Length: 274
Image (cartoon, rainbow, N blue to C red):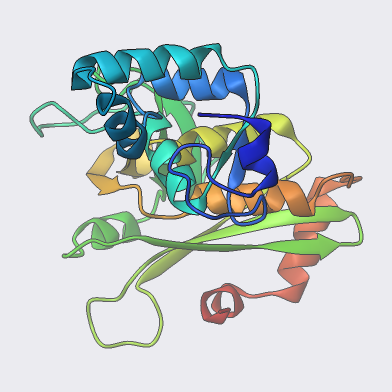
């Protein structure tokens, strides 16, 4: 249970494992109650100790849940418990319907020739509700070559660029080449203004989903292919580090920052970065 003594002793308030604030994370009482509501936060060690007093398992869990919920102190969580808590709080976006013919309606028409990946709030599966979907836009015939790749895999890497106009976060999505080639079959960049809460919030929502849905969209908003991926991309951790690194910074001209980034790096440079 949460108490100031455990925090000073650097013990996880959930599992009692040794930790530090740098290794783990501090969770507010309000957010911890959200975890309790989802059935997480009462550890087996504590349940066992309470059951030794003669209570049943159900009674022990109920008592501990009530005690945890009334705590007004922050909770120090070890790295393992942080990972579990994040997974519990993720939005379950597993596609539940049968795969069939997909159409994109009411999608804003893009300027002729524009390509790239666009994250956008959308309802793909009514049983899931609104999520952030990824749309790979390409009005050329290449979108059909891309959609034919099997197995179709997509990977993500990213980083922070400090331009003279402020910080810029870059993301590189790439599809490996099915042939033994050193370069990916296809890749595309995305750029985020870390000082724009609206931009960051869209990617933050995506990072909080259990599954990502990618639609390959060709000319006339025609769906070339639709894919679902388990969210193993690590974007949430990248956004956390971005937020810490850019705290107190400002972006004076985001378009100029992007141009400076393009002048400095090629897509091949981004792909080979470790």
